[in-house]
Figure (cartoon, rainbow over the protein chains, first blue to last red):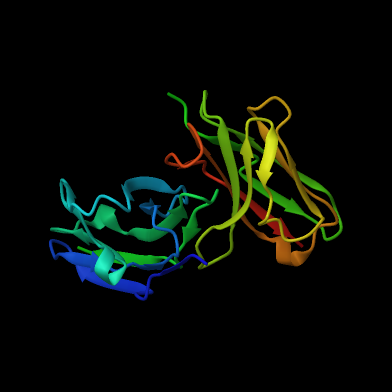
Length: 114
Length: 113
């Protein structure tokens, strides 16, 4: 069975701090996809990144970076120099190649204070 | 281009009533998904359409829930005999094909009194 765990329920940081959001997943499939979505106060889920299980290269996009480690079944997300606009709920999700759905973690609430 | 749209944005109904929630996916996307998000939780899968057919309805909680996509584009989620426990945000997503990235709509917030 597939499962995603986001152990951090809520994180508060001060603007310009770096912050890392943890994601640990479980799957029996060898082929799968990992995602991060952002849900700002407006409520709409915004796609951030997708990685497949065969690509362990870390990715950087502006202030965002992702660290994928199959050895520890983790897909962590780091925001560098956080800004107030980063305040949102962040969800990590998993999709198995044989499946048809996204399985989401419970989400991490990020509060960035000015 | 236009994203996924959902109507209504909010729906208040009374226990026992019937409701319909509509989803208009991104043009050209063949795969469409419905999820339900309760307060403080991540979205939970309900049903997946590939074209006009429901390819996976394993997430529907019971037979009061039903969804259709008759022409392979717009989809309607139907809930009969609503219960207070059905109150949640219902999210629709679409993707170009199965296993491609899913893009979400703004959701319909359903409140059953």
